[in-house]
Each structure stands twice: as C-alpha cells, then as structure tokens.
Length: 264
Image: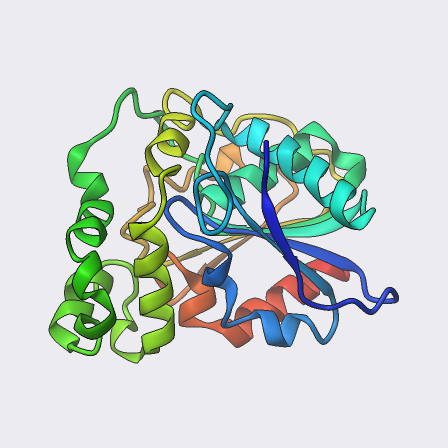
C-alpha cells in the first residue's frame, strides 16, 4: 500500500507525531495546527489511499486496522520511526485507535479528534444522504476556486460541519473542498467501515484523549459517541460550540490538548 507522507520538522530531538485525516479529506486538513505543533514535534502527516497525494489501487484493504498497519509500515520505512504520538480526526481517529490496539508498544500517546467508529450500531450500507458533501464537491469542482469566495456557497458546504463556518479561512474551505473533489478512495474507505465499529482493547499504558464538539453533526451524540467503546482509561472531553473538525474551530486548543496528552 503506497502512502504519501510529509515530515514538517526535522529536529531529531523532537518527538514524532503522526496526524491522520478523515474520510474524503487530506493531510491539508491539519494546516491550522501544524506550525504550532512543529515547535514541539516532528510532525508527520499522512494521505490515506485515494486521498490527497496518495494513489488508490483497486482491491487494496481499506478497513481502519489495515490502514493503520500501512501507516506503521510507511512511517518506519520513510523515516526510521517505529514509535510515535498519534492524533487523528474522524476516520483518522478510528485508525489511530486501531493502531494503539494492534501495536500498543509503538504508540506513545493518542488523541482522537471526533473519532469515528464509536457508534452503537455499525452501518450495513451506504446512505446516499451521508455522501452529500462528496457529490457536491464533485458537481462544483469547476467552480470551487471562485465560488468559495461567496458566503452562500460556504454556508451550504460548511454550516453543518462547523458552527464557526463564517470564520473559516478561504484556504481551509478550498483545501477541504479540493480534497473531497479529488478523492477516489472515498467510497472504498467508506466501505471499509461498513459493518464495523471500534471495540478492541487499548492497554492503560497508552495515554488516550478523546474529544468531540458539542455540535458535531457528522458523528452526533449519542449514537456515534458511545463512551463505553472508547478505552476505559481515556480522558473524554466535549468542546462547546465546536463541530466535526476541532482543529479548524479551535486550533490553539487542539495544539494544547495534543501537547498535554503527549506529556502524560
């Protein structure tokens, strides 16, 4: 499985931190927090297969556990890094949880930013209404660069993602819309989640923080935020006036939480 990664900070004295994005997204989703994190970590961002700059090969395993193993392999091969801190958003948070359960000796700490997989009942099939953002990004690809200067289009695309959508920068909106519109791995990764949820043991020696926004419409409370499925020792945080991409709504707070988790 071929993954494209980027190392932001090369200072060998800094601990490595791997950031994993969500479904239909890309490493660019973490732009708001990478500069600050790079002051303390060697930040490694990953593009999942068929997302961002990573190619997708038909038939490759796209379930969260397999994607986690691909990240382990790629990070070790590219940078010689076997152990690292990890933070993931949405599907990326679920992948991070699977990594901590699968090879806990290699995960120093874990921060889940609105992680997927903590739902009461796994989906058995795709719901067309849930792919609204994907289809809209596909339809609007020729107009996105100019159209996102219009608040009306931004509202359609981001009001359900962030209660602070009017404050999101043009760069955040453009990067995310571009990523969604150029993600051949979108449906394969979605299919990799069907019939599954996270329900594997993570040992207590891996510090874990799970956080959700109180207005997360993508993974809403309570059906997609089942605390009993998270590691029993995890710190569980709910952020007021925050949506499904906490690193957009509160970048400084996310840097603080990731840093605090890594220090535990």
